Image (cartoon, rainbow, N blue to C red; front, side):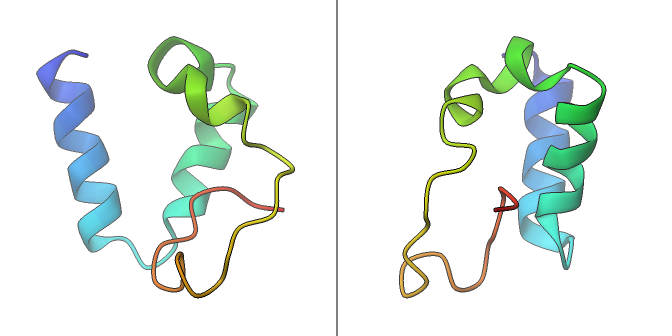
Length: 60
């Protein structure tokens, strides 16, 4: 993964109040698959709240 993509990911996960918006934008512009193909397969799966309380990256 290119460093600029990794830098943006770190910024979003560490600083954004709602990281899901970033991933939703990538999904809506068909950019999720090239960089985060493994996340595409998680769309629609339930997240355990106790595990992902602070960072919700995929809208349900």
